[in-house]
Amino acid sequence: MTATPHDALDLDDPATDPSAVAHEAAALLAARTGVERHDVALVLGSGWGGAAALLGETVAEIPATDLPGFSAPAAVGHGGTLTSVRVEGTDKHALVIGARTHYYEGRGVRRVAHGVRVAAAAGARTVVLTNGCGGLEEGWPAGTPVLISDHINLTAVSPLEGATFVDLTDLYSSRLRDVARQVDPSLPEGVYVQFPGPHYETPAEVQMARRIGGHLVGMSTALEAIAARHAGLEVLGISLVTNPAAGISPVPLAHEEVLEAGRLAGPRISRLLADIVHLL
Image 1 (cartoon, rainbow, N blue to C red):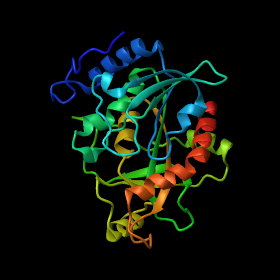
Image 2 (image 1 turned 120 degrees about the vertical axis):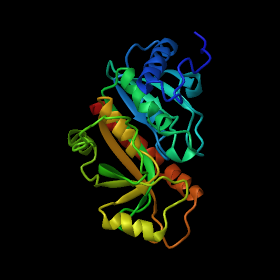
Image 3 (image 1 turned 180 degrees about the vertical axis):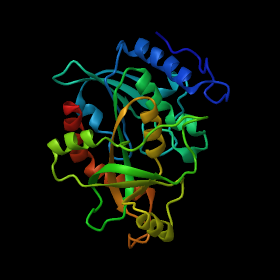
Image 4 (image 1 turned 90 degrees about the vertical axis):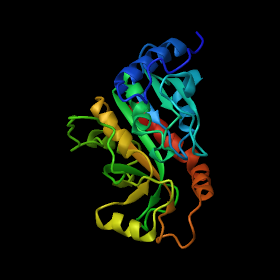
């Protein structure tokens, strides 16, 4: 089946229910991949892209922009595809979302949340959200994977609309963090602070994040996690520390540094992520 021109439903139209666009995209995804249901979804951030190849057999890979509601990624280091993978040794299928939209791209929070909403509409019950981030702890050098235990959303927006009240007490599932530690008991955990970006945080902002309880700073994940919880998904969040945050790092920050840290850590963290998914 060839892709249909999109958007049949316009995600950017305030009158359109974003869940309707997600279900439309999920139906086309099922038709294009031949997979009726995906059991788990992964959103792969900077440094995490190699995990897809270790999960099992790739069933299909399609450009995300072939599906309603998706945009081409703006950040270097992010792919632009959705990949269906048959998880090795199981009868489960994973949906690997390599087309993350960041809030700083200015495309609206609906586009930021669209990937996880499509995952839920495609049948997933669990989503793994990954990212590359700045670290505030001196004991976490570049290349350290950290489980997200909670977040602080400093974007001043929510992916939820209207009188939609969702409990976020255990947003980042403690059960799933325990599963991750079955693979690597040494994994630390911390609170992720999402800033709007795209500029890096100032040293003063990093110190503020530390004082309000943060351990990691970045520009993604929190808004997706909120939308995922609303959609009924159980959330596992994992950050890769790609650099010490501003004011902690002795050198100026650069995106090239983030990409290089992800490249060096890639094989190890990809194996870690694949092993965790096999237990989900």
